[in-house]
Length: 468
Image 1 (cartoon, helix red, strand yellow):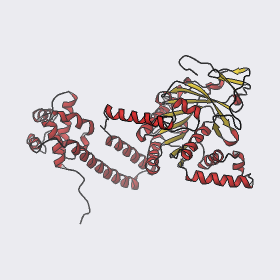
Image 2 (tube, one colour; image 1 turned 90 degrees about the vertical axis):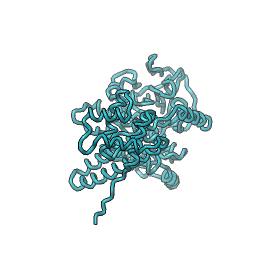
Image 3 (spheres, rainbow, N blue to C red; image 1 turned 180 degrees about the horizontal axis):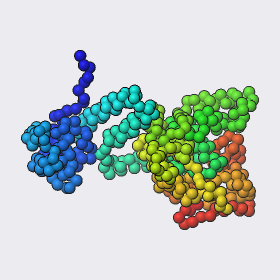
């Protein structure tokens, strides 16, 4: 006896939805916004909906007469599908009152059928195809299916007003729109980590991109108890953990790495490990991810761990889904668009680290500019915030540095330039880098903030378009 089951479908529900369209024209926009032809299981219904869509695209009414005429013109009638069959649909409809519920059930049946199809396809490919091609194809199908499942769920302005008011209440309660980064001066400019923002954190090597990202990740996960996902394409998970241990414990990073610790430091490190072990920090250090794989893995992290923030280190190490015939600029553009899609799709904030071109090194003014991102495709366009880092000490700039009309001692200073800001004006702010512990802070390590008045050896060039 066969164990095969009939595929999930309902002829009556399909007739009900199509009949409602042809009887009450006001139903058509709702149906079109939510359903596509493949949702209908029966051949007659698929063909009828194809004709209805053709009429809709030309702003013509869809009733029994016009649909019959359009199906005839498109050659959709044959021995298996006749004009008489179409009249049966309208005769079966009593009312369109429950059409939204019927639409939802049809969507569920379609998703079930697609899940069954993809499962069978994966089984076949599992025996006959390359396993990586099988997994990539399956992940692409799943993401496409998720997009189709969300089709048409547009909110009214009233829904958005409610959401905006909730955001205002959140600002009143926690002082910032998003989740605090732990760096007060940064929060004041970008309003914290706000879903679904894509934050591009860009700098030349050695400026502290990974250190800043981990400083934020540790604060969000430990202090705010919000799960964070980290995809590291450059460093191993063990290297990231060592850095997080240094940030949490305040013990010199090199000492931890070499296990050159006193007894009291070992105890202190054990306490830091206990704290980090309970924190919602989830690390994936697989190299060579493409944007499709990242999107799938991030979706899994969201479902499994409920991550609210994602860090990608770094974009230029990712590969395109299909790089044949594509320039590197087009590939990076595809990756940056994908990162923004992840932020919106999962409703999380994404911090994506990015390298800059060597053009920065050839200028007397070492502060990066938005133009340094242009060869990286659409990073600037896709990002909600673009943040640049520059360490004056790295370039042997001694003395004082002016930021926003205030002078700061260059020792341990990192100039943080928010060059694009969705939540406010572009601005430059001072941050401090505690190199032994690989962490960032608002104030100079081990001392309160005290601005100094020294000769200004370095003054970043500004323009009206890019205030600093």
